[in-house]
Image (cartoon, rainbow, N blue to C red; front, side, top):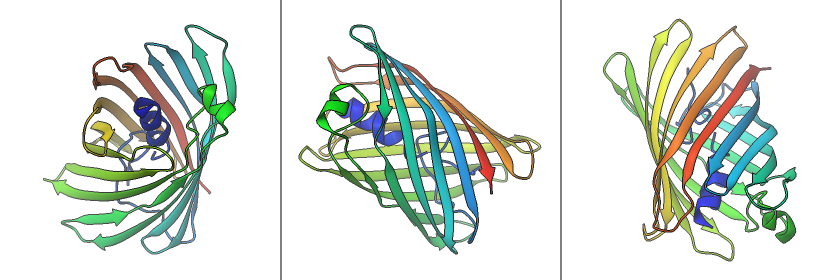
Amino acid sequence: MLRLLFVVLSVFVFGTAKAGPPLVTDDPGTADPGTWEFLPYATVASSDSGESYEFPAAELTYGAAPGVDMTLILPHVLTDPDTGDSESGFGNPTFEVKWLFVDSAELLLAVAPSVTVGLSDSDADKGLGDSQDSFNLPLLGEVPLGEQWRMFGSFTYVLVSGADDAVEYGLAVTRPVGQGADFLFEFSGSAEDDFGEAFLDARVGFTVGISERLTVLTAVGTGLVEPSGAESLDIDGYLGLVIAL
């Protein structure tokens, strides 16, 4: 349940190389006021029980005001379990508002509350997402590390309707690796709200600007730690294209 909740929520928390996509860990950066960003993407995750995919899937972000943006995430999910039939359908939609309330050269801080809408019990039983609604309360921060590197992290308390609450956390670093390209690395995880039953994953990614309006996002990750008896993440992948409208 918690691994499923983490996978469902983390892919929704996904352009400066703005973090979030292709990582799970989000950063405090926001879209410029009055601008739109469209992000079609695809994901794949392989675990002990089979594979799951999100395709087609998309995020739409609007810069509502200086330091404030709004994002809507709509995924289409396909599951291919080792046993049983493959299923497909829409996954959990999420709506987020991000507010950058500290914006200085030494420190960025933001909050990004979001609502993830639960699916019907029948769709949840198919593995398309989670049946419970959740209200997510993340705190996002970023600091520079010298001239090239920067570090950002997030901590999220997840209020789950009708189930135990959870926490999600992530720490990531990034640096330029060429003209218009950035390297990213993160550790991210989730746990019950008492920090029992914890998961930890690692992920490496790149962002590559191919024009003024187009940026390619890609990442690959694997599970490092999971509770005894829990399903392990073998590998996951992300590919997206940020389109500045």
